[in-house]
Amino acid sequence: MTGVEDTFFEITPQVLLKAYACGIFPMSESADDPGMFWVEPELRGILPLDQFHIPRSLRKSMRKSGFEFRIDGDFEAVIDACAEATPDRPSTWINKRIRSLYIQLHEMGNAHSFETWFDGKLVGGLYGVRLGGAFFGESMFSRVTDASKAALVFLVQEMRKNKFILLDTQFTTEHLERFGVIEIPQETYQERLEEALQTTSYFSSYDGGATSDSILQSFNQIS
Image (cartoon, rainbow, N blue to C red; front, side, top):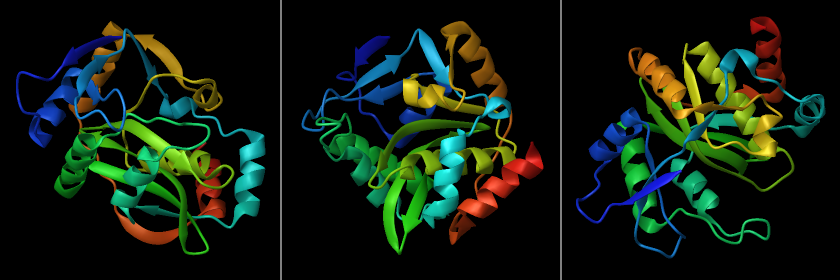
């Protein structure tokens, strides 16, 4: 991984999109640190959409959950939840500056949240950046069991439906590997990114309507 401090110029949403197009993304040392630095992993985590795997235990959990799914129902609430400290994650990298930039990207139509709701409450989700036919996942959170995992399933369904090419997870974790995430060298990643940027895909924002049953059924139809 490489990191370069941003002390030499102001980062705007437009600069941020150019950075993603070049294969780099920003982070901060902590939520309390006002600074940012650029990251370009030597090995990049991606989730091949045609190899996406839903663990059997998650399928069962989703069917019993009563979850409802939304796109951009409450983007700011999602990024704020991702920035919260939890017992399992006492420190996060999302500072006020990063929060502001991604909210601006959302207002421009380039950042989206995929949300899990239960009984009228936001219980999990993730957010990321859309550029061309690529989606760059940034962070996720969960307040009830499997809520963030279900949001990832929802994201992949929407990406496959809307002909996206690349789902960039940035890094790999044991949690993500269960879904089919792999690591590829930087050079290979750049080739896949360039291909994705030659296409244009969009998400259709909607407030409610998707359920666990409808999402799982769509995978059975596509597969």
